[in-house]
Length: 213
Image (tube, rainbow, N blue to C red; front, top):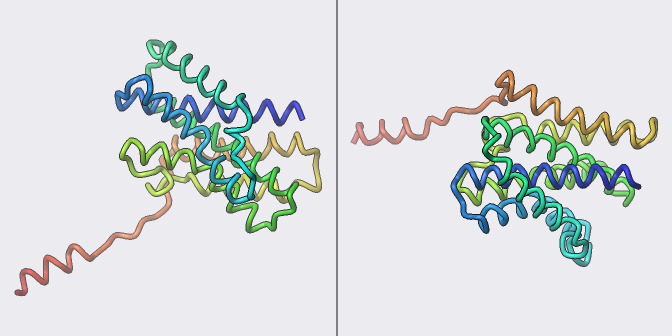
């Protein structure tokens, strides 16, 4: 389907731009920026294709993905003088890529008759996998582990697509579900909504033990 292909291109480009901007932020050289863009844009797809037992990840069998990533990286580097808010742009493109990759993965899983738990898990890992690899490569804690509403946005979009799949046109469903992921992510960033954390008392206990000794 042409519409699916267009969304796939948008998602790949969005994550590639996110990776390239991160590489620029951390002052990587040109090769490092490209590598970070590749792993950000294709990391989740690698994991998905391994789970669903494809012989080779689609990144290796379809040169379109490398070309999209390469062009997106080059354009990002040239457009850098006009990018005033680098961190905000990284999160914006990351949210777009998260929505597209998560929902498209859910669609592929449903077509393969994967059970709902598998659909949620595979879609989630596809959406967040590239971002996790990107953050690890720059020695940063992945977004999914930093209280931010990230995985929850992906799961919400996946469930929305799964529930509506038999009721409305698939193209409309894709629009709605991707937009849902994007809006949840962007709104949570804007209002600084975070999931609760649990404060550890282990450090305090250890200090008390030393004082007691």
